[in-house]
Length: 166
Image (cartoon, rainbow, N blue to C red):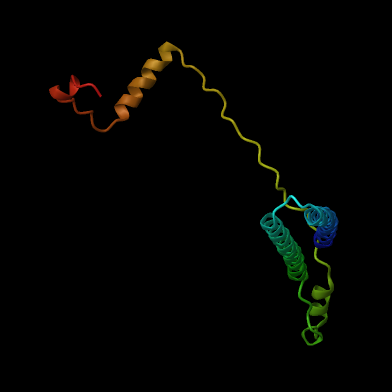
């Protein structure tokens, strides 16, 4: 289902590109013809400039053809991708030799159950509840309990380390 939809979308995009590309090519060709006619009729344009402009017109036409070829190849690759995705999505059918028992025929003839598309929406962010502030009377026993859990007391700093800024 999705592959048919994507084939149609790609076909639409290719048609839109082809149409706009042909319009752009027509404008460029018309501009080149006007420039060529203007150079031929003008006596004030040096011949070296005329040759340079004709070289660039041919260069533009060549690269325009290359661009069109690259885009057509890209659209073909996209269509091939969806074609192979469509083939991969089809389930393999059992051969008649494999369906010798009625149980096997019954299990292969059943349509797979329809499942909903996987949910791709982002999960909501869970925030922690704000911590409750303990009253000063309750904080003292909790601090003593945390201090008693420490296995080894901290070593005192050497005298040289106390006065040095860090």
